[in-house]
Image 1: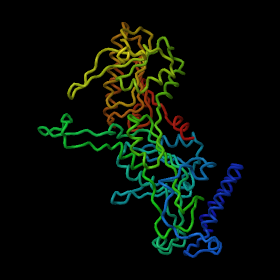
Image 2 (image 1 turned 60 degrees about the vertical axis):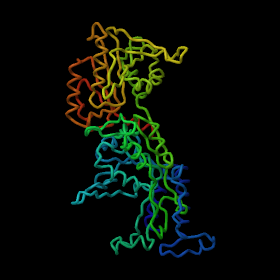
Image 3 (image 1 turned 180 degrees about the horizontal axis):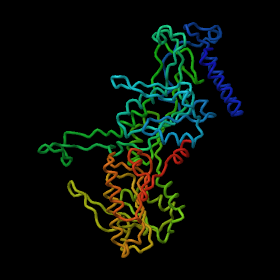
Image 4 (image 1 turned 90 degrees about the horizontal axis):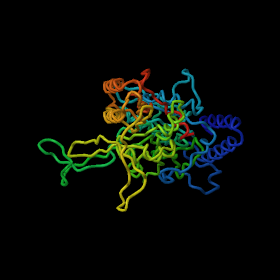
Length: 485
């Protein structure tokens, strides 16, 4: 048995003692699998024990499908390891505490180190002993696009990595592959959490033409197409890990099979994704599990629990367009128990390249007329003391949301008595501090009775809202912890 395997088994034994029966069973499983792998010596010769079984000893590079459907044995009794790039590290630190993940002192070194060569190419290292056989929660940052390659590379590494035998140090780690003098490690299960999915609006394609040097998608014979980057980034995230280089490793470090090659389950967890179905379908052939989780229902529970909650008679939810209404109406009914005429939306219509907004508020009763059209009505006025909650999934400038605030205030004889809360799950704001500052100015101009609430899924913008008395940034770590625990 290699020294690396011995160390891992010692850790497993200690953890098994702490975790009880489940840990002991897991330790036994790892040891049995490790002993089995040791039947092939590091020099490629077959041990007498394996010769007696008549089993093949060469690594044949076959795989058990794209990836396994069940996590490895160690994940069932160890706490998850949370990894994040720099942009999401603050959220990751909070999530580690929520999940009870192991913390390491600074002197022990980082789990993930990202430095750069003089050429500016990434120089990445990870502590393999902390991730092998473990459940990994990977907070993936899509905001800083300069970090996409290094994050995708790390995601590939976590699905399968070579650990050279210590003896190869003499050759400066140059011969372990050709001589098969390495072990193979993997995570047990990987959940890639995407708090915000930057390309979310590019989930489909249109036909485009050039007219007088300008792009237009109004020509049915257009010869150019959009690249639906939302679909293709999802496919990159879902790509299975590599196979070990030939002639193959001499042992598995996680107790999972090498022949056929076991690859860990991979899950993509999207928080409040704009369009769910196209993304989910785009990776349906890659064996990844896709989870689309809405944050709005979670927020509605928090909103209702506030001591300032006005109650069902005086609370109204307003959506800036019918699409948002359709997306969230069921959540509003289930969580806030509001009547149909308290769930409102604004009508938008597109005329050419322009969007026109009707200055009226509409609602639907849930019934249909004889021709199948949805029945509904219009909200004519608000009263002082009413509480309006405006909801959308994300905003760039806040213009539509502030327009909705002004529309609602204009329908109240005493607009100063109307309380308004704007909630968006993601504050995009063009990723520009100047846009955030302008948004704050517009908010302050509406008066103290108007509040803006968002989450910390895009720290580059929401960090700028901290300490503003009319703004609240909701931490999503508890929400994510409940989903991945």
